Image (cartoon, helix red, strand yellow):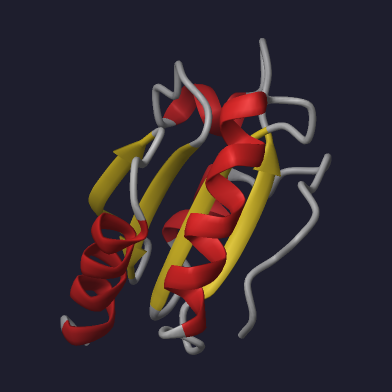
Length: 110
């Protein structure tokens, strides 16, 4: 699956996320966030090497239940999941290497 380009304004329920199968990354942020926009080339470079990982891009904000359930406070926050369980988290990643490492970890723990 290719990297998702647009933040979804409708978020899935936490129970739905917890039931996901396989390797998934949830990216919390917004389209107007400078940090989120700066991270997009890093994410794209990392996801190019991990096409089987599902990418869910969620527009976050005050009172949004999914982000609050993961205690998201800064954007972008990347939650790396294997079969619905969090295995890693990156907040405002500085480089694509750290994203690649986390992606490789959720793919290899199959």
